[in-house]
Image (cartoon, one colour):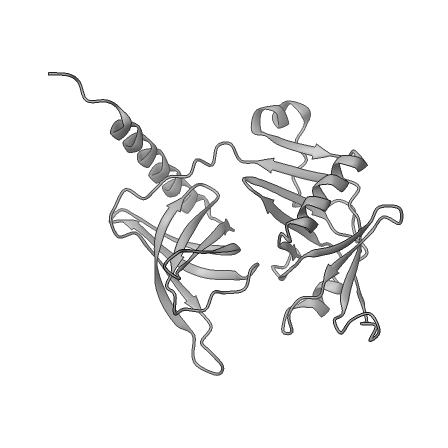
Length: 261
């Protein structure tokens, strides 16, 4: 596998200072971030340039050997194709920080019956890692009362896919949060939801791809889905930027104290 993916940004020191994007090469710092991913059981999304992806987690780190073990993904994932990919990118999210690195040496380890029933993945620990802190991605609440995202999800068993109309809780230039009803099964973390129609108001309607990053349970049994935009075309990005700008302006106006009579 190539050690440098063409799709991986390489910010210089000046742009990094301005944007909050940093290249990390210190082994101790890289190990610390990977250990946090392991301890928090944070989903690690592996993807190839042709759009295949799966979700896994770090289960063991061996800094001396420069290796890490990953959970084997669920049956039906595109693991065989990813094992043969020339380039693989790994992405994980810690709070508002996106971590990204090239993944080399990925291979499947057959399960040892005496150790456990599950297969594991093994890969090289990265020697370089990028941290993207999207300071410009302000999160806002929609300005209209009924913003929705129309999402097509697989049906149960052999049932046909169904389209869900989910409420948009908040959004930013990087992604959005949706409210999933209690009775509806959640998609798998890392799953790509394609051709999602997002209707924010009468003038802002987007067709986007969304990647599920996390699922958070709510007190009433519903769940909040955190998703990021993928392959956002320039026109949709422009409309989204305009909407976020207007929502920010409205929020600032509502926070201003009323003038005394």
